Length: 97
Image 1 (cartoon, rainbow, N blue to C red):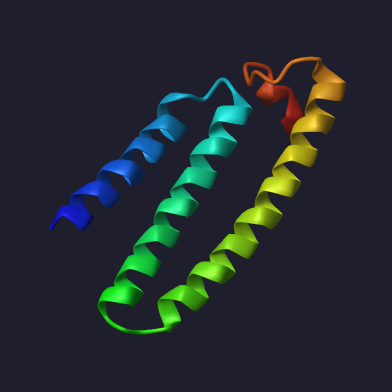
Image 2: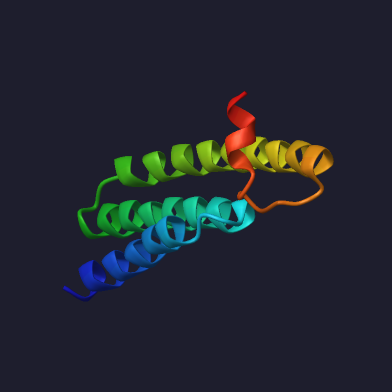
């Protein structure tokens, strides 16, 4: 039961950090990364508890996807900073044009 509470609290913390902080793109990317790490922890713990290898394999796949996502996100962040000279998202409506 302690696993459920700790994982839900960590995932909830990441989710609310993602929802409540919509001004800074770096904090949004960190929230996504922490939520993926939380999901990896759930897969690893339950694969150990259930004596199954598939959870650890899925965890490795999610880590690979998270690494690709963070590299693409940081490249977008650098290009956004070069254009706007800031990383706040209050001018994000200009990106739609």
